[in-house]
Image 1 (cartoon, rainbow, N blue to C red):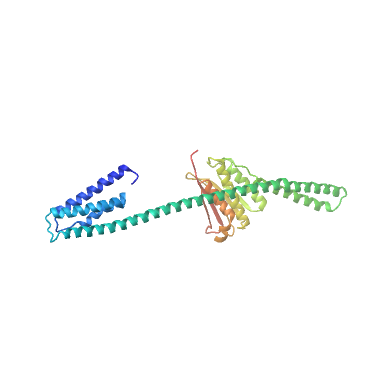
Image 2 (image 1 turned 45 degrees about the horizontal axis):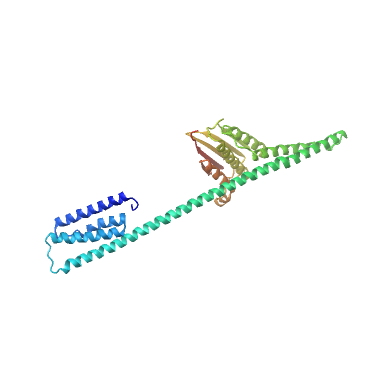
Length: 342
């Protein structure tokens, strides 16, 4: 209020008007009944609106109007000291009340300032936490790509060379009609199977951004590769196209599903996993359900990096993330994304 001249003028006029009305009522009632307590209304308004100094001015004016009204109404005093004493007593009472009210207002302003500073500190803390989570996510992506390159260019090439060497040995053993040729041939088949698994793992780690319309096909391929690689029943159920507006959103949803499936296999020891993608009521719903041993303990969940990464990915795209244990057992991970207009 103090920074707006027009508001200060309006408050001053209102305060003076209330003071004048109370003084008029005090005069009309007469000196037998006093409205001394009602004068604190404009005094309190003056302190709240413009500070204690203006409150003192209104207090002095109130006492002056009160004494003048009583004298005008015909009040008789045995000694001139009586009205002076009454005025001093009333002023002291008003001054004490003004001091108490000013102190309360100062405490309120101090509390508001502390709340403002604390809110700013919490905002900065949350922003810093978001920045750290984003940095962890970026580091995770870099490490994922690094491992993918190592698998593809390192281990994959090494296994390929091993398979070629084994094939040459098989051919030499077959030329000599050796019995060991069959066993070595089986070994070469196992190495080739390892090569294919390594390629699939590298492909998942080196996955580029998924197109907004390619999420369903990417999830379907991922479920098929998971079934082959880990020998579990991983099925995809969903629409051919989800109405996403950005490819980055599709990539985050894919990574959430990927992390949930791997958690179900590694920690939940699941044998059946269902990945669902649906669009309903202006939102995209991604869910991963398994028949594993259920959620780990709260302390273990709190320390799990995978769960925090999934939650952070969901927050980055504005989605709601939930993980729970259904009544029939297992684990259910749900990510709900409100659809936005293109």
